[in-house]
Each structure stands twice: as C-alpha cells, then as structure tokens.
Length: 328
Image (cartoon, rainbow, N blue to C red; front, top):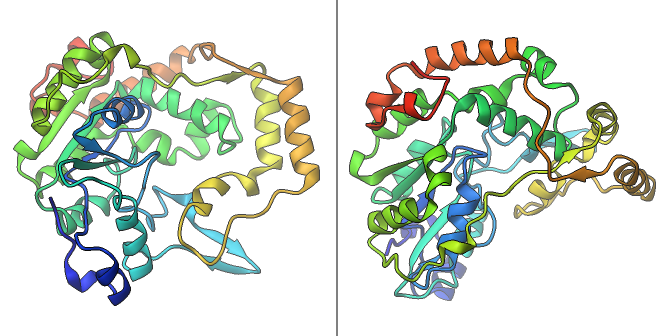
C-alpha cells in the first residue's frame, strides 16, 4: 500500500479519507499494444483494483502527449496544471474504492512515450511496478493512425500524415530511448516488458507471468475473456478525413471533459450532430482490416525504426527480430 505525501493533501481530503491509496502498479503503454486487454483481464481479478478507463494523469499537461487537454475558449488558452491540489485530489479519487487487501493499478497508453511521466511517477510512486507492452513499431504506427481516423484526429492519408504531422504516431515507436528514461529512474526488477506479438499468440502464459510479477494468484483469471480491442475502419477513407477536418474542433472533447476543470470542451451543435449521424450512415465503420500500407512507406518506417531502436533487443533481453521485421 502506498500513502500519498501529506504535503500534497488539502485539509478536506485529509479528514475525509482514513487511508489514501495510490497505484502499486501501472500498465504504461505503448498505445495500440494490448494495454486495454491486460487492463480488462486484471480488472476481473479479486486481488486487484483498477479504475475503469484510462486515468492519464502523469502527463496531463504535456502538450506533445495530450494535445486534447489544451483548449482555447473565449480567446483564452486553458490547460490542466499537473501540480495543482485539484489535479492531485482528482487522481487520488480514482482509487478511493479499493479494498485494503487489493493491489491498486492504473492504465495509460501514453506514459511510456512521455518525457515528463517517468520522473513524476518516480517522485510519487518510487516502489511502483511498471508493465510496458511493445509492438512492432511499424504495425503500431499504422494501427495508431487508424485509431486517429476513427476519433477525428487526422485529416490526411497515412503517407501525408507522416510527411506533414508525424508527431505522436511516429515518435511513440522510439522504444529504446523511452525505456532508457525509465531504467535511469527505476530498478530493472520493477519493470516488466511484454511483446505484443507473443502476447496475442498465448495470452494465458503472459497473464500468468504478469500475475507472478505482481505476486497475485493467476488461477482465478478466466483467459477465455481475452480480447484485443479490434478497431473499425470506415468504408471510404477520403470522406471520413473530410468530416474529420470539418468537425476537428470537437475532437478530443471527451478527454478534456473528464478532467476536474472549470472549462469544458466545445459543445457540439444540433447541426454537427446531425451531420455526423448522416455521415456514419452513408460511410459506416466495420470490423475489417485497413488497406495495406504502401510498400515504400513500409520500407521507410522499417529503416527508421531499425535505426532508432538499435540495441533494443539487448535492453529488453528478447531477440525482437523473431517477432518484428522492423528491427536489426
């Protein structure tokens, strides 16, 4: 059990909670690499308490990781402040229902790639256990792109997105430098690496190893509940990108509205809601594979990630060439 430093507590919260709980473990990403599946399976474990959904706290004010949290309202730029008592209380409130015998956890697909999160986690949770999932970065980037298509965050095809606005989609696959930041701050025994491609072949084996890492009983988990959060693809990409551009001011509204802020996301009008509904009728999404990535784009990304992740196999102690094409 981890107690919050009293200096971060206001008087009201100190008197209303006998014992403050914070995470014993964090599922920290990478994005589109089965973090949701691991979260879902562990949430059914009687020895574990993990809030529904992603908390996304330690990088809440990092614009590169959480651009949706920055909003311009009435000609004023507003954003959440990580070090405010309000944000600290909000984070702590997610774990208030944990029972005394339960391990407490949280899940964020963005902490691994964040530049701010490692030190903040170390300052707040020095003994925390960290679970990171790594996926072939080329496949991860393409899956990430289609996630952004669905959520209205990209306005170009994949090649043009890489060319004009690579940002999170490309950089989140630079695993070596990301893991090095954590290894500078945490003992290697506190970090568990899961390779996505191996995980989807045998989730039971890997969930057992995660339970062993957390020192909880693996026999109570029902591995038949495994799912891998498949994403839907629009029938036609170009119309979807057009509607994304038109409705871009509303993208990420759900993210900002979940934070304890005085301001909220831009409210959709009846017209935009109607337009979105009509578009979804004409251009429906379905559970199907996206079109193949252009071969020259795949070659470029393979070269890029092979260079950026050189030495990653030695760092994680796994021969990643057996799982990925984009590694030397």
